[in-house]
Image 1 (cartoon, rainbow, N blue to C red):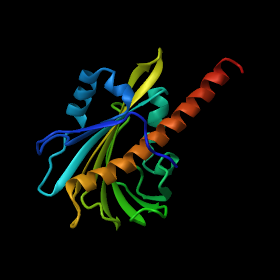
Image 2: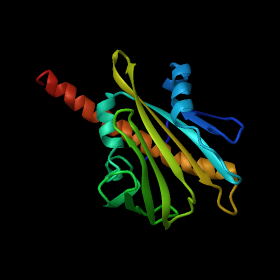
Image 3: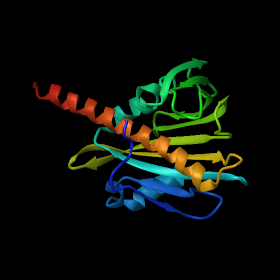
Image 4: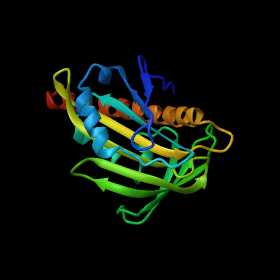
Length: 210
């Protein structure tokens, strides 16, 4: 799968609190930056410890927020849009504190990941989880995903924001670690957009009787 997004840009800012990286597709760079910054300020500020890095990524999706959220909120089925997940088994009732065991497809420096649900808010459209075990190098990884309604080309759209904080593994730099995790998230967000937009197109076709 080709997960490179055209016209993407990255900027880095200093500080131990908040986000240290920012990635957005080109649409967001021409959109309402003030609103995006407010969403990040409210939901995506991480307290970084020594030897950690963080980043915030944005993606605009040409699909309504309820459809995008229906995929994002499925803590029990991340493989619905995450292309590197092959299998997921959940321990618990999908309440806060539930744990999922994720199997990772070959090609990544990982085989399994144990992840705990930290936040699930269907009203505010927020999902947060933390990696608590598994065979990988992402120690103390924590992620927050939020989805927000917006208008794109006169149609209902969605702004997806995902942020993370993670330890920098021994032998790697902050930039190397951030680049690796951002690449995975970009793939996930592109897949989420592709699937959501395809489903939205099917809904529009059905609604006009074609």
